[in-house]
Image (cartoon, rainbow, N blue to C red; front, side, top):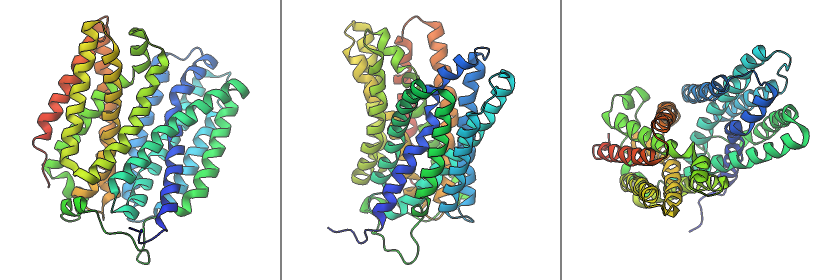
Length: 401
């Protein structure tokens, strides 16, 4: 069947381009080592703090975009985000090499502060603007956008690594800042919600059946279902981070090349698209159970591979876990609209996105503690299975609001 309008496809293309460049914030792991070489007096804790601050500002930016959505169009929000992200990278390119202390503070201000805040605004605004054009396939378009974010990190990260070797660290930051400014400002006019004059397809049957009414953010926060789902998402994300943050190290430990760990990122992106497509076909509840089940199987496969000495199941489990981790954010972006309506989606989605912060703290902390307590990864793999069981119990109580 032909689409009722062709006007939405340029919006989707612009959203995908936006998500690719939003991925520039997550290239931090590529810059971290190079910055440590330029500023050898910086401690590991000081450098790592930049990522933590960045994630905090990302969450704050998302909440700010949600609050702005009723007053400022997504196009204006995208332009503001592009300026913040561009100035953030440009600011880092001028860090004073002869003053490590001042350079560290400026790194926090420009990379973690401006870049993190801008990325949070851009992420929320893009999701809120593009999804309403595709109410007949909300899950699929959410998955496509989020997969683009994942692959944007790989694309821009590898590109940045090549540029650092070719022209140096600070010129690379400068080029990335200029690229963010130019590209994001160029696509911003296309990123807006449909107006009264625009024709969009009716919601898919699964989504239409889920929708009850439009909940305001305070009303959503008073619903136990929201907090149950919030905790479920924290469990899925934290369980994934137990392994994903150390994927390359785990690969080397079990006798494979470190690049095997990069495949987890590919499955992470694929999981976002697949779970979105399944949400459109099956509805949200079966997909939540499916992710739970796959995560549990992944944990048990990794344990079995570790204990048996035949390590192939470890690598298979890592790939499956990458799919589950990617599915979490894709499900959230679609589920919030299905359960709590369209009208306040930007604000509601920004609150759900706050689960990123506790997951980013809990996952790495548990992983580090387990590594300190044991020589291998058996306890880490067991913890993945335990967390998936906790998430499964929570899932049993998640209902429509």
